[in-house]
View (tube, rainbow, N blue to C red):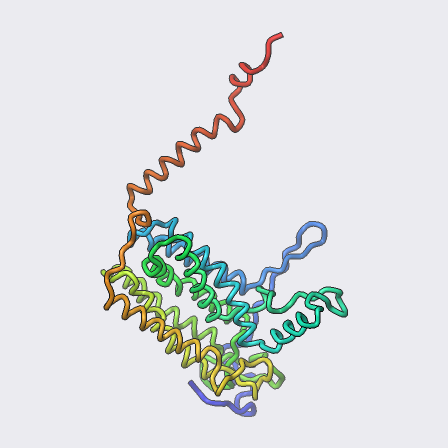
Length: 348
């Protein structure tokens, strides 16, 4: 995908406009609220929320398609989201910002964890869940949330998570679009035509660079038609738990070789451990997990859903009838009719 580019060869504005994606960055929208309060709406957060909602709704549709009760699916998704967002930040801090985690630890040991010399209070970076997310940290948290759900609910995890993982790339598309519009995954300097010109990271002069968020958008766009087609095929439960990781892990492993190095960007670059990024090691682990699920699905006994976790149109109709009956009972007690009030009024 192109090599290192020399600034003097690619630095002209004319060449950048003709060859590369122009530089831009989506900034926060400020929404004015009463009492002088301003609410910043971050494009990344808005796109991630859109992806979560879209993925959830498509997964709900898929759940009915495979005979899974949508309420069981929704319960698992709630556990996954909590685990994913918490671990997504904490593991991001550990893997990519170890110096800040070490600083938090020093604050704990000397008893000044919440104190700050200037502001009087210091919120530790490790607990700032909004300050950064790692995709593989999110995957790890989602797995932990799934295990907690399994222990609480006693429902076969593979059968339900298979629906979640099928829907994941549909939401992932919006998350990676969010990464691209804020450019938080800078790559190495390149003359590749899909590079972003004048990538404003590090120190000037700014140069064209790979944007790894954009490349994962392309991966999603390639995967979504395949997943949509596969949903109509007769596949064993758990198939997508093997398929999606094995399709993602090798691609992500290759992309991480395009990440900017600390020699170029210093603290703005991802750290390397024995020459590889944390994403490299996580990709290898994810590939092993995907292959293990394939082995379980095709070599183990069939995965069945217990009756209480199954969905049928009759079951949903009965559930809606019960809810309608409860609503009908609740309406007269909410305010009462005029005749009821007249009867209750005492005579003089």
